[in-house]
Length: 250
Image (cartoon, rainbow, N blue to C red):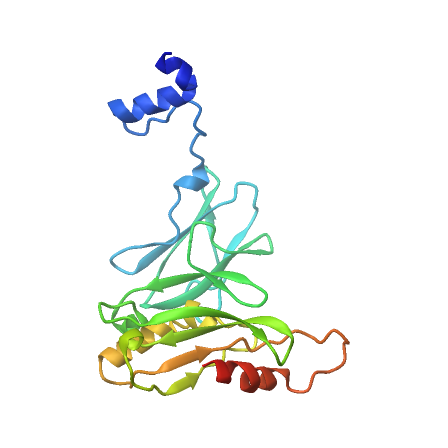
């Protein structure tokens, strides 16, 4: 039996390219050609705080950059290049930004950014520009706590629910009791919003490390409750879930 009979020709050629060393930018036979959109980096942050946003949308007629909250780039148009890539470069101070593209009137999260901000109805993108003013929520070299996604069956509501719980550094091996903070999200958000967009875990890590906060447990419950099957108004469903299920669990 020969090597040729063991492997398809394309697979054997790919293995030989890896073994022998391929020239720069060479692709194995049969591989999908690299697309323009796969070569983009967005957003890219320069050392001087200049941020470049890029989006491949060759058939679009207008692309604007939107922001949730104040930002110098809010509502600014991107410029289209010959390759179908739209670009905008802006000078941004250190901060955490929530942004998205408006493509011919359609809201689109940045497809080249793997840090989403997800709430009850939208998917946006997160951009962190480092600097002195963003140090309080930055991921710094300090002891880190743990965050757990807790799935539970709510006896009060009769449905599965989820909450997120932060425990401080050293909690797993400690025998002491900790104060508990119940941290509720905003009206359009969910139980992970304080972690994704609020950076609550890193803020607590930094405050605890600096001696500005006591080690504590932080419980981030889901503030929205499903409508009852009967369609009748549910009297204070969130309070019943919090008092009857979340607090006893904690």
